[in-house]
Amino acid sequence: MTDLLNDTCLVCGIGFQRKNCKKYCSIECRNLLREKNRISRLKNTALVEKQCVVCAQNFKYNPKSHPERGERFFCGRSCASKHYIQNGTYDDWRLRRDPKLGENRPCAMCSNMVYYTQGQIESGKQRVCSKICHGKLMSEMFSNGNGPMCGKKLTLAQKQKQKEVLLAKYGVTNPYMLAKNRGTISKPQRWLYDELIKTYACKLETWVQKLHCHIDILFDEYSLAIEFMGDYWHCNPLTYDANYYNQKKGLAAKDIWKSDEERRNKLSSCGYTLIEVWESEYRADRDLVLSDLKRKINEHIEKRKNTIHF
Image (cartoon, rainbow, N blue to C red):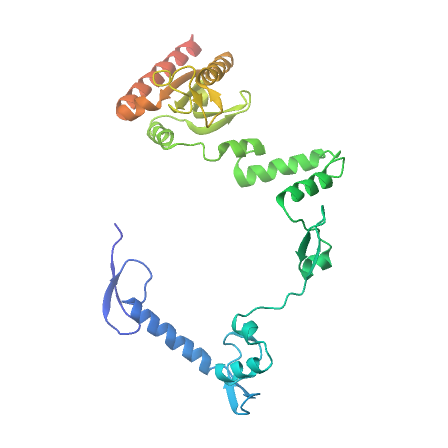
């Protein structure tokens, strides 16, 4: 808990307690000081004197107050209203409608008319009337060798620069690895890692190049991989039937099981031992899961040490 500090309000001088860099005892005192500072700034600015174009009376205004309005010509809204009513532009002035400086031109892909702004006309930018026309325009621009990188290959220097930038900014050397790292760490996976890192040297959500895949929790020194298996995403056999269709992955449960089995075989063929933790077991008793997981890790580490020593 943050310690409270004794301080004095800059406006009313009343003592109060603060836990950060507050200077006022209340919102009212803060608003009073801000208004006082605003008036002080206005007083220190040289006022400009003008003559109203409607009533011919002299008035003064601060050019730094609402500078976006530009030069003033009226002493007040009443005179401004009279002026714009007389020349027939009252509604445009009241609604602040700016005159359109562009023009309507045909769509870049069909004959429908599309509004082009003045900037788009000057830059020669093409506009379309719908998403369908936009897709056709993109296909026309980037197909048949029209793309800016079509037929071109990066030099070794360019590839090396890409790797250096990715490594410096995101800690990876391949954009694919960056995409796979996004949003893949679940709360249970994070909790298991936080508990294991207290005892073991392990890594979270690590890309293994020779496997071309990510490992949830990796013990690189002992070739041990721990995977947290979500019941829905991996279709827990205790919960789902083989013919169940997983809409998110677009696969039947039996196909997901086949993919998981191929992953296990891949890890095993590369010399890795895999320990799987199911979501249902974690939710039932996560402390029991953690103790059982630590037991398996210790057994594996002891086995590896004995093998290496032998």
